[in-house]
Length: 203
Image (cartoon, rainbow, N blue to C red; front, side, top):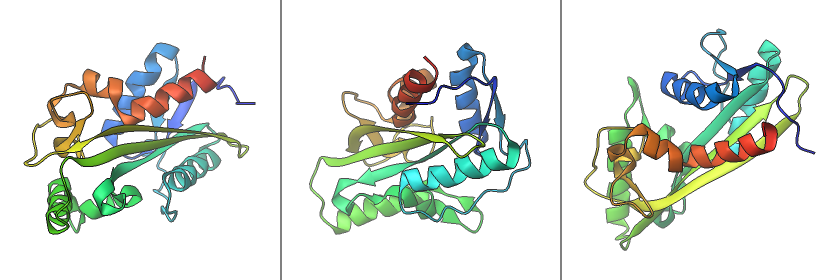
């Protein structure tokens, strides 16, 4: 049986202010208050797994254990078919520099690799997100979402984050980075996982 969520507060196991704000908007209609990991002075645990679910579990359980609150964590990334589903769980690593993350560099690297492979068009990719809701007693529930699309070049759009400027979701003529937040949040990989979480644990 899926465990239902009955608390009024949930810890979002992220130090990313944008992600926290997005989650806050999604939970607000249900009367649930979100708290971020930074607010609770939680360290960022090392993500040592090779799967989205593995890394999301590390983050969710560490946060729930440290605070005594139910904790929600997500791990997400982009899989490029012609690159054997890379970068996948290493999406953020491809953007790492000594001065923080540089996704323009990561997207340029991805495009360069596709050119070197002479990858045929359309260049298919999918965004994946796995949400793990963990309770302090060690129980968890897992929900995976995805959105399929095509990689375009050059990059287009200024909204969003990460690989959004080169990802055009199926059924749309514009990239994630050209969409307003409401449109993107309605069709994104995170929205897909979130709607599964809501119907299982909240409805």
